Image (cartoon, one colour):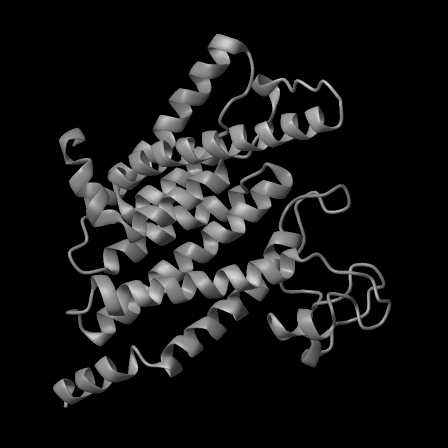
Length: 297
């Protein structure tokens, strides 16, 4: 019976139906992610953030409740043309972007597990790995957009996530309890050393401790190697993108006949999104990166 189930799963797992289900699941979680991104950060009115459960979805401008048929991920934004049905206030395209990104990340994680990296695993192991990766990617997505908006990585996201993902990592086959513990210590410890050292040298804040907590989550699930790769690759991505953005700014200023020279040393850029992107890259390219960087460890 188990062999028959495995054979059926092998056929179904790579079918269009399975991928469609995963994409819809990702979009649904992306819709909830939008709620978290909007409500969880602190504000003047809500210093501790707002509940992600109550009240229900409503227009931020007129307060009208969002009807259930207007709360369909991706599609609702399109058929409402990105505006409230009642007051016609425009919604940010961010809602569409987050839902689409979550759907793509879920599909990518699922495809990686069932069709690339763990094809020989049992159906149960594949589903477990997919579930853990999907939850991990979803959390990184939420942290990324909150950090973009507020330059803040929330403790109420990171503190519970560290033990949760450490525990989830232990559920995976061939898990190493020490790898996760070392990853947690390395993730937070390295950033703490860099941040405190930068402050002593410049009397200015560099990396925030929130970045260390994010790296601790990465290390808890993926191990200390992922911490080092994420820190290096995230720094590289951040440098390339930041320098490119400043280059566009200077080019635009030059085309307008202006002389604008931004103080590059004082431009605050959130580092969390780059760390999150690097961690996702590490998941998909772990084998290649371990081989390429083997001499380092």
